[in-house]
Image (cartoon, rainbow, N blue to C red; front, top):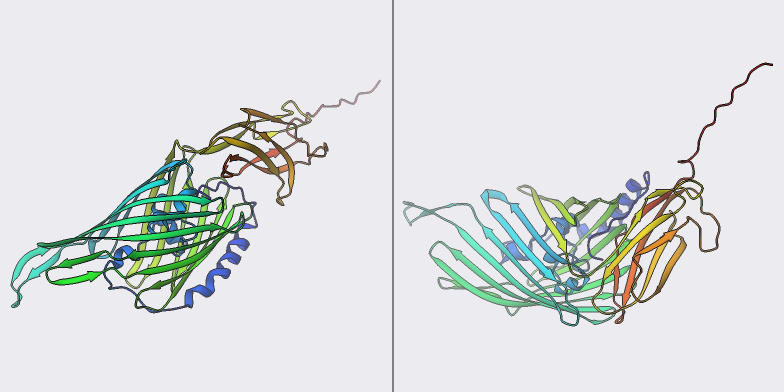
Length: 424
């Protein structure tokens, strides 16, 4: 998945399903209550993007956005298009964290990514031993991540980060570097498992005479897509060096083609958020999580362009096989990592049953016509149907279009003929 689910969920089902997904992740909230704050680099270790925050931070087996390299660099191979991501957060005491991330998908070469996160504290008072005022100072920390990932098999991706950290407090400053390793396996088309080893061999920084090393973190998790990629549940366990394991989890559900809701738990803190997908491949994310000092809010914006993609768009989206608009036309296009081997356009009913399939070898045609009939030749009843395009390349890599909706409505062309009754 690439984080751009555009499904259609049917009214009346959304609330019950979302509650059920949250109840599945609730047990993770109480696995451990040991705080792990105050460690070197805790601001970066505990950082969450707006989307991952809404999922309670359980993102190791998801990692399908540019900043996902922070938690599992192997997840970058899920991104089929070039993507830019920017984010800004205002924390407590005028502290801010701003981020910029970019991923360019590779073909025969690895997928490459770059991220920068910058923390800037508010002003602290500077005094001497007798409490004389010497003005103020700030703490500044900047993290640069240079990332690469690659599919080593049709079901397995691996990736790594080089972390370069720069920290300054008043007149003292230091730099250090470390490494991350990640892996992601697609166990089934709906189930992924991920694991990451963060801060291998550092970074280590020395301000004045004290050397501080970022603690090693081991994370393992799972992500399960449901309802034809319209919903997601995710959970993970985290082991930070020197502390007890903690658990977190979350759920996501798309309502209509453009809006998603999320809720989750990070240790014992509730979290939530939403996304709004715009037609021009621009997406806005929002996340919030509880904190002892108040609620932390986070906003992010991402934009996709170029790269690899599959696209399917019906015109018209409502048609009547018995009326004037008796067919609909699917406009298809794609750009894959390698030579195209085959394509499939699947149409399913509300229950997820496949009712009509188009497909073939090689590149998909520019247009496919549909008359509203099933594979059996029978006319399908009125209602909403889901469709999406899947393109497979010569190496077995699948590129999928967003799931969209189309509607058969034989009543839109009904005409009422008035009847006059007269006497002779």
